[in-house]
Amino acid sequence: MPAKTIPSRNSAAVEDYLERILELINTKGYARVVDIATSLAISQASVTNMVQRLDGEGLLQYEKYRGLVLTTAGETLARNIARRHQLLTDFLKLLGVDDRVIEHDVEGMEHHISPPTLRAIEALTNQLKRRPSLRARLK
Amino acid sequence: MPAKTIPSRNSAAVEDYLERILELINTKGYARVVDIATSLAISQASVTNMVQRLDGEGLLQYEKYRGLVLTTAGETLARNIARRHQLLTDFLKLLGVDDRVIEHDVEGMEHHISPPTLRAIEALTNQLKRRPSLRARLK
DNA sequence: ACTCGAAATTAGCCACGGCTAATTTAGTTG
DNA sequence: CAACTAAATTAGCCGTGGCTAATTTCGAGT
Ligand SMILES: [Mn+2]
Ligand SMILES: [Mn+2]
Ligand SMILES: [Mn+2]
Ligand SMILES: [Mn+2]
Image 1: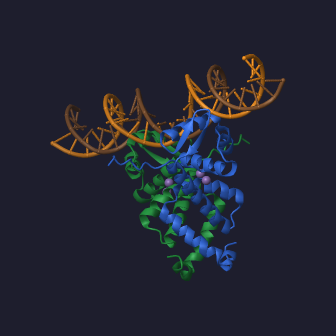
Image 2: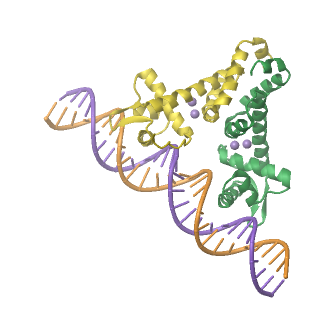
């Protein structure tokens, strides 16, 4: 039985990279450094650096000048953050918040939603979807 | 008319310091370096450093070895973050999230709530307070 | 096979916000 | 008023996650 790896919280930056990489793979079929950089509006150099770090952490496999694939661990984390992003977006949308504001706020909030909070907001969002009368009361 | 100062977003760290300083002043009447350090669970050295930075940014007035007071700008920011903290806490409480989880998540989320999102969650929270039937549906 | 431009990497820099260890200050106490 | 202690400060360090500039690699196209 190998020594247990330390839990070690993932940073917001790591989550943002993984989320975007998964999104690129899902839409374009692959995620190159230049695509990630453009999509996150940061420099290619910064992306190269982070991608090498994520490789070292076992969240993706990277071959220099070639390309990358998410590992199972990396994809799990990516799907997880994507889920939080989607839920918060749906929730704020139901509250009538402007799309630009939603995008901005969700990008920050998504990194601080633990599973119980996720479930609670999820339940509330589902109720809200079924109660247009209540939604109307919020404007 | 003087040149407009750059908006320059306040960091989560700055907001946490200001929030805690205001809280200490409200409860103890003053906020010493040692109190802030204990309360935020960081070293006194780190607090000294930040307090001097906040002084330089005009958010508080600090006299070495003496003490500090929030400026009007600093107190405004402190009240603002405190308000976001309180609202999120009330909101998640209504959803039945565990207190420990609330404390943890709110401490992170509060820094990413812009005014429109604040208002939307506020409206929703008020509706929730008046509709125990809906609240019951969430458990 | 060579050349050329885009993509990627490296090197070196920076601000932020933490830390420990060593030192200084101020207030209390004998 | 001297000594002691708690509080505060300074000095020096570190990891994270950005940046630019310079260099290297790759893949087309001729
Ligand atoms: Mn994000
Ligand atoms: Mn996101
Ligand atoms: Mn906080
Ligand atoms: Mn707070």
